[in-house]
Image 1 (cartoon, rainbow, N blue to C red):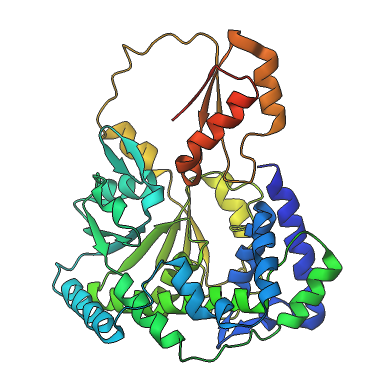
Image 2 (cartoon, rainbow, N blue to C red):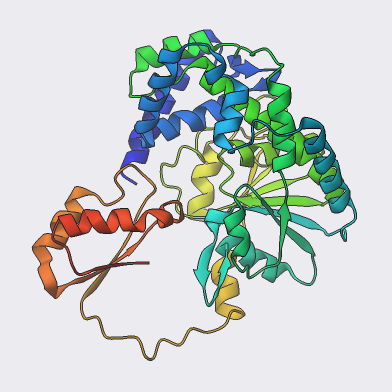
Length: 402
């Protein structure tokens, strides 16, 4: 991705500017290192500048209940403000009892609804489902998914999925947040000073960042309870770099359970996987114990960005999806596919403008003699109609998206 070298460079400059204040470890929140979540937030703002606009609107409202943690949880997870906190707590305890009664399995995999891709009449997460199939029957596994939106429950899953009813826990947390005082981020003023000197289009308030850190702490506690109930020997996920994924890692670390992030795509200049030196002696709690890389070319840049020796390591395990698909998956019948002639495949990244202008110009200049196959990033699958409108306005009629 063209944006990643620029973003990685800006984050490195920020890290260097923070050395004046003792490095990125000067940033803490309620006793935990805050830098991993702040770094990922900066990455998000640089990739998606509209978040800066949203945060400037929140900043104009000041420190009011509307910008506090309770309102943040209410908006983010569409909770019911009139819900009964005692009932929510009782439902959460019932859910934990349900999990405790399940068959104990060796491994726990966390997936997300939007990571699932449709294939052969079902939905799957290629890296997770592929690895689960490859490890069977030697290792048993639970594949779990947080239930935040009910509509995803209707999608058929290739691997049977354990749906985690997290909303009662979040509802109880919302009511608790109404009674809590805001917490400050230690080192935040130094961060703002360093960001001002480095430059770059990034803006967020201390309160908005504190809300994300509080969300992370809430999910860390939630996953501790889930892992206590399920008792896995190892935890896996794909794409750890968001508040909930980092919370799973933090919970696993706290319980001495190895946690592994499986590579899901290319990582060239991807700041989420590079430049994690300077960790505390016990490591960054939000990072995985092991980064699972497809091959040496991917493992080496990750390893260079880790403290050596250190608590975070890289393993080269191959691409489980390709191996499983090659050896075990059902074959696709492509004999009746139409001859499309000269065809170009272009994969889209989850950025502000996923179809670059130079690609649109190439489509226009090549004309009808070439067909284009566009593969949207999973995070943009719901926005395919929006992308189709962009191409239609540009007069491109020979592009296919699925």
